[in-house]
Amino acid sequence: MYVLFALNEALVLRSTGDLRVWKTVLFVLLVADFGHLYSVSGLGPNVYWNISQWNPIDWGNLAFVYLGASMRIAFLTGVGVGGQATLKRKE
Image 1 (cartoon, helix red, strand yellow):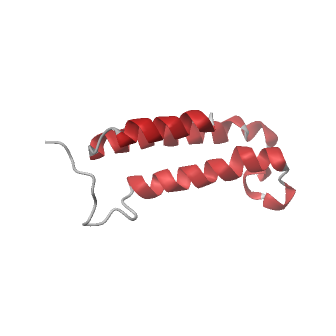
Image 2: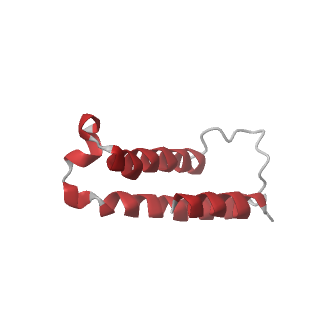
């Protein structure tokens, strides 16, 4: 799944400078991140926050998803995309 995410981001996002396409792709991947996090909800709410109890599978299922989701949220909310942004909205 992470390889597919990486390929999707690398190939699709490198093929366009349209900010709307970037935001759409990253929003869909963020929805997938939340779906992935929801899929482990059967383990109980502590699995999301009790890092000291995580095993290697939890680190793969949660930590990497948290990292990817936080980067997508940052981009979608404009963190780090200042006035010098190279992406332009297509008119």
